[in-house]
Length: 240
Image 1 (cartoon, rainbow, N blue to C red):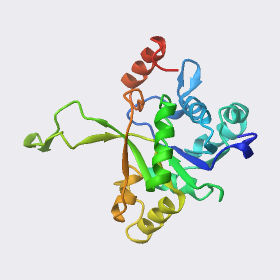
Image 2: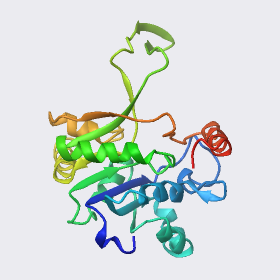
Image 3: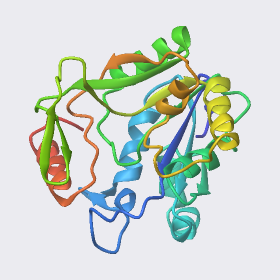
């Protein structure tokens, strides 16, 4: 990010190395275009608006490294991308690959999905502010549907949704805390596929993670239906 010396102390790691099996097609989700622009670039441009953020590190599938570093590097830099590294075997390993190159200047690290291009700026600012005070903060939204626990094809329990929330990204942490959580997990069981977000690693160490209200517009685009919804939101002027 050019001219980042006058910006803040937040580094963002964006894992964007998944296989995109639910989306289908030959192009991985972060590189799919929405209104003529890759989702990944839209996501980074949104985060670039926040002055606290001085560094955006993108972790991509190894097969996409050449495309991003060579053919698209000018556009990537314009979107705010500072560094790009290859991903690992799963999401957690990809995040760790990004953490390994985070600048020593970073007091906070945010981890954000590469396919959430509409996260509201005010939500990100609230997460950063809360993480500064409490160590870790994640965005949450209420559940609209009634959750059920099933075994096979049989419902075995209806779970109260009163205290259940859906978790989004970015998840923001004090740098030392997040890195310690990853190092602890690597030494006590490894970075397996069961790790679906970063807060659970911090939680597993007995540390508090604060909840901040997220946004229904912070859509994670994982299926063709999600892409259609994202296009409709743009067409209606509800997001930019």
